[in-house]
Length: 296
Ligand SMILES: C[S@@+](CC[C@H](N)C(=O)[O-])C[C@H]1O[C@@H](n2cnc3c(N)ncnc32)[C@H](O)[C@@H]1O
Image (tube, rainbow, N blue to C red; front, side):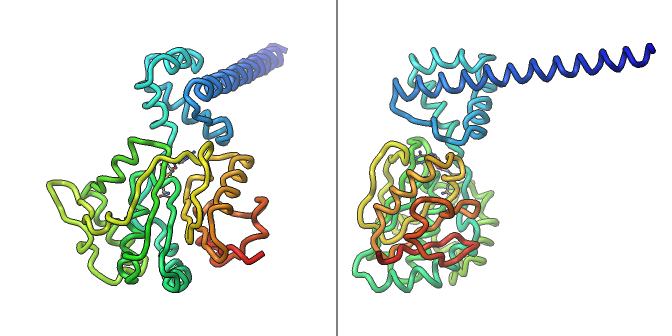
C-alpha cells in the first residue's frame, strides 16, 4: 500500500512539474510576442514571422548573455537603448557561412546557369542574406574564372549592418583556409585558390579586383521592396528561419525581381514546394535547389 501511495505521489509531482513548465512556456510565448511587437513599433524591424522555434531560441540565447532573467525585462532596455538593440539584431541574425558552401551547388551553377548568363550583354545578380560575404566572393571567383565577371553587377544584401561591414572588408581567418581551399576545388575551381586573396598576419584578404563589381547594401527581406530585373538570385539558408507566411512573401519578392528565364538558388533545406510561385518555376537541380523562371 505504501508503495502505491508513493508511486501516486510521484505521479502527482511529475504532473505538477509539467503543468508548471507548460505555464512557464506560455508566459514566455507571451513575452516573446510583446517584445517583438515593441521592436516593430519602435524601430520597424519585423521579426514576428520568423519561425516560432527560431524566434524563441534566439531571444533566449540573447537573454542568457545579459544580466536579466526574464524576456519581458529586455523590453524596456531595448526600447530605450539603441546600442542594446543593435546587439539584439546581431544576435537575431544567424550569420554562419563559408566559402563555396555546399560545393556541388557551385558546380551546378557553372554547368547550367553560367552558359545562359554568358549570352546576356549585362548580368545582374542578387545575393540576399549574404552574411559576412563568403558566398558572394565565391560567386565572384566563379564569374571571374568563367570570364564574365566584368559584365556582372552583384548586389549583396543583408539586414545586419555589422555583418555587412565585415562582408565589405572581405577579411577572413586563416584558420578557415584549408576548408575553403578544399571547397573551392570540390566546386570545380580551375586555379590555385591562393590567386584570389593575399595573407596578412592571421588573416586572408580578398583581392580588390573581386570587389569592384559588388555593391553591399542593407536590405530587409521582410519590410523592403524588390530589386528589379535580376538574372540570378541567390538566397541560401535564410528562408529556413522564416515561417510559411514569410517564406511565401519573400519568394514573391524574388519572383517579382527576376526576369523570365532568370535563375533562383535556395539553401539545401529550403524549397519552392508549396509556395504560391512554385508553378512559375522549373526545377533545374533538385538537390542543389536551383530553379528557373518559366515563360508565362
Ligand atoms: C545563415 S546566414 C546565410 C549566409 C549565406 N547565404 C550562406 O548560405 O552561407 C543567414 C543571413 O540571413 C540574414 N537575414 C536574416 N533575416 C533577414 C532579413 N529579414 N532580411 C535580410 N537578411 C536577413 C542574416 O542576417 C544572416 O546574415
